[in-house]
Amino acid sequence: MKIAIYPGTFDPVTNGHLDILQRAASVFGEVYIAVAHNLHKNPLFTIDERIEMVKRCTSQYSNVKIDQFDGLAVEYARQVSASVIIRGLRAISDFDYEFQMALMNRHMNDNIDTVFFMPHEDYTYLSSSTVREIVRFGGDVSEFVPEYVKNELIRKLRSKS
Ligand code: COA
Image 1 (spheres, protein in one colour):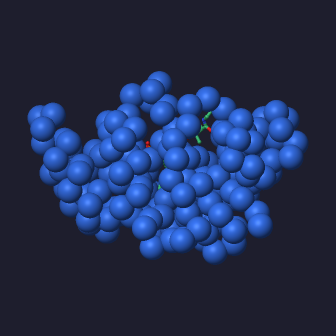
Image 2: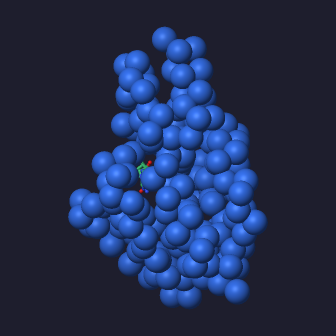
């Protein structure tokens, strides 16, 4: 059984991430969503809040586990016996960064491969920061995030304003 990790900051998780997850979960025996602490990105949501949102949006999958990590993704993958890192490629602009990260990760651990999935074209321009920005300025993100995440964004951004 192939074990994969899907690392990211998930600040917050979006329908684009969930689209990638759905594809990955149908290919790999087990997928760990690895929520990165990533404090240098100064996340809007705490690690616990990000994990809770991911949990609520992925409860339908029996082969998906949610976890957190700090440090190198390859090291986390090794700890959970994963041989694959899942990444999403939304557009050609993602490629340079992803290519560099995939090769560096392979250089650090040649037993771990990066596998890319492309999300549905509806999510090509989606990112967590655009969703945060839309909510901050009072826009509707219903088509981009699950209901629970939308409500958490409104709660968080209203309490900040
Ligand atoms: N749908 C919607 N948005 C997506 C997406 C998708 N399918 N895929 C990526 N994104 C968005 C994310 O929401 C994020 O948006 P934001 O920057 O506006 O918040 C942006 O694209 C970048 O996401 P991603 O590329 O997944 O980066 P990340 O910052 O969330 O996570 C890590 C990057 C944590 C996976 C990576 O830095 C890492 O592995 N860190 C650990 C240290 C390490 O091992 N580094 C590698 C050494 S070479």
